[in-house]
Image (tube, rainbow, N blue to C red):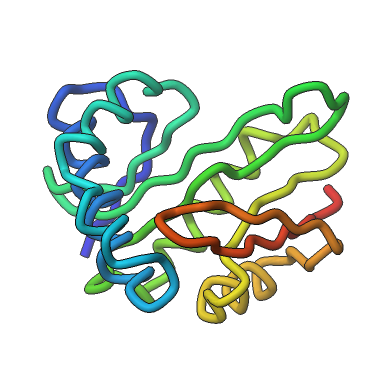
Length: 160
């Protein structure tokens, strides 16, 4: 398998990123996020988000197929702080180093930052373990999102 990680540039990549976003939420968040909310999260809605916010997005491709993506950028209002806004890999491609490679590239994009943050659902133990393996740790920050029903998020940080 020859995986390419690159900035998202084409309409096909935008559609591919949207599919990965939609599919990953369906695969990863059942039992964490309200089913009604997940049922209302359509591929079309994910395409609209991908089209509106294409900057700072890296895609992982297996041939022409987008199989994962990461989004990262500056934290508003903070000097020397960055954030990994999203990192998703299709379930069938997990445990092959693709998430790690996406994270490394996202962190490279944030090289001038002193600290990098990300948010994870508190109940998403699998994601939290992955983030800890790449060097993030919970820093005590928490927030509640209402996604049909309330879901608690925890902030994780990594000093660069």
